[in-house]
Each structure stands twice: as C-alpha cells, then as structure tokens.
Length: 413
Image (tube, rainbow, N blue to C red; front, side):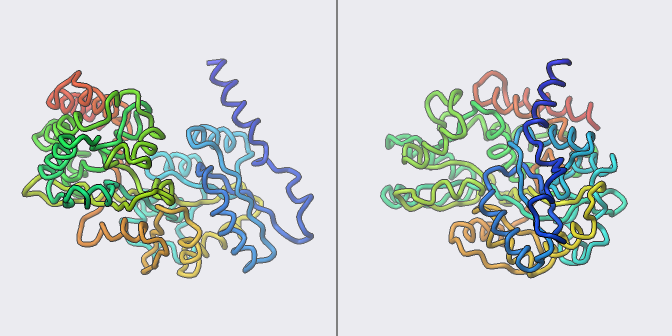
C-alpha cells in the first residue's frame, strides 16, 4: 500500500502544471489561462491547433493542453482532483468512470450548456449522461473498429472483400496457403486483442445495443449460443495470427502490417495515421457477421470534455464547451482531431482524409454500438480479456470461456 501511494504521488509530482499557481505570471493582463488535462499525449500538435483557433476567436482566454501518459490518466486525475490541483478542463471517460467523478463533485454539470442536448443524438449523449438525464461532459470524438487490409496484395491475388465471417476465414486460409501471414494481431499487451478484435466483432454475434442491454439485465446469458459462437470465431482465427503471436506487441502488429509481413490487421481507426506513408495501397472493411446475420460496427464513444467544479474560470470553461457543442466548433475540431477520431455532433461534417471517410462510410446502413463491456460490464473487462487470450492459445474451449463470462456477469449484475 505504501509503495502504491508513493507511486501515485510521483505521478502527481511529475505533473505540477495542473496546480499552475503561477500560470498567470506569463500571461497578458486580463487574459484567463486555463489548463486542459487529457490522456491523449499523442495529440499535442492537433489539440494545440484547435485551442489556438479558439484563442484567436476569444483573445482573452488561453487554454494550455497538458496531457498525461494514457495508462496513468485515471489514477493521476483522481489524485489531482482529490488534492485540489486538477485542471480547469479535462477529457472525461465514458460511462461508469466518468459518472464516478461527477458523483464525487469534480465534473461540472454540462446539461445547460448551449448545444449539448440539442446538437447530439441520444446515442452520442448516453455515454456521458447520468440516469436522471444530466450531462457530465460534452461529447467530443468517437473511434471505429474495422479490418485494415493490403489492397495491393488483394489485387495481386485476385481476392475480394469478404461478405460473411465464413468468407473471412476462407480468405485467411487462401492467404496462408499462398505463403502470407493473414492477420497481424498479437496478444502480448493483452488489451488490444479484447478491445479491438473481440469487442470489435462481438455485435455481429450477440446483436446491437438493445441486445446488449438484455445481457446486462440478465434476460440473455453470456454463455448462450451467440456468445459461444463469438469465442469460437476467435478460436477459428487463431491459426491465422503471426507465428509466436503470444509475444507480438501492439507496435509489432502495426509494423507487421506496415511492412507487408501481414496482409490484414483488425484494429481501430486511431491507427490510420501510422500508415500515412505505407508503400502500398490499403483500405478498411467491416469485420463481417456470420452468414445470415447482420454486420454491425463497434463505433465507440471515446472522448468528451468537461470542466472542474473548482475552477476559478467556470464561465470561460462553459463558453469553450458551448463552442465545442456548436457547428462552428465541431467543424474546427474535426479539422484538428487526429486521423481516425470522428466528431460526434449531429451535423454532416466532411473530413479531408480519404481513409477517415472510408472508415465513416462503413457505418452507412449498419447499426453501431459502443464496446460491449463499457456501459455496464467493466467488471468483466479483465476476465473477458483473459478468456479471449486463453481461447486463442487453446487453453480453454469457447464454451468454457462463455461459462466464465456468465459467472462473472452474474456476480456483477
């Protein structure tokens, strides 16, 4: 316990900028300087461009983006807020994690901010909404899940995009028979095989949001035939992963695809920028559903922004959030968001990158939903992660994996 406390304090001490007692010292007279916290440490240039545009429109406000290393964000932010040194504005996690900070009195009530309830769909609002309808953040960006594929190799081999999961497995078998590694995914870092691969394709087997709710309430069981089939789909894909996939990291997977050592990579839209200079043509397709079922897309509500109830600048914070919730702000944000992050506002916004538009086009005519465990089942994250990995390694059967999930779900309900 003592070591954990010391480690947590070290995180806070490494980020003294949030306290920012002297941040006004280098600011122009009359200018309010706000600090924005985030877990998106890779997005400094893009977010700074967005904030610079806002300051151009509002010259009396400066917002400084000071992100935290992603794995440390939740713990560091909570400790900073508990200590009274939290940022003025901050990225808010969806569902239970964000609700907890709102209930603790740290996240501001965003319900009355102009545009919040009018300019977003109910499904976009839900991840940052309390049961009584209050909003604890303004939706900012979502991410998508799909299969990256090497168009050059597909064309060379005369291969078409698969329309069913059975076609997908047959495609993998064809590639393997011709000497290719079909899939780049590994399990060394664990999170990605669950979040991206399994949760990315799970709605194809279990159904959309309405079906997910039935699993959450217990009306459906996580060891029913659909869940067993989803785990079986992972087992069937195992032999098409890289040799030694147990030791393949997420970065390794990106490199395997980028160097054409693997033909496909089930991944998230946030990786699109990694392949900007790839020496081949690539695209994305939706992981198809089994024959006779409807293909669905995991389009995950990833980021929202809120304000600190203890900020010295509540009016400035709320004015900025109102701008993000407007057509003008969302349009500016869409141009500044990193490739693969999509605005959630209920206005048509044209993106400049063709791959980003290709990702968005996958949603057309298809039902979308958040990752299965996020709304109510985060207690299942760790056991489901291990079950997926064990199935891939052949250590347990799909039925055993599903039975483990139902036991965990029963305990969590």
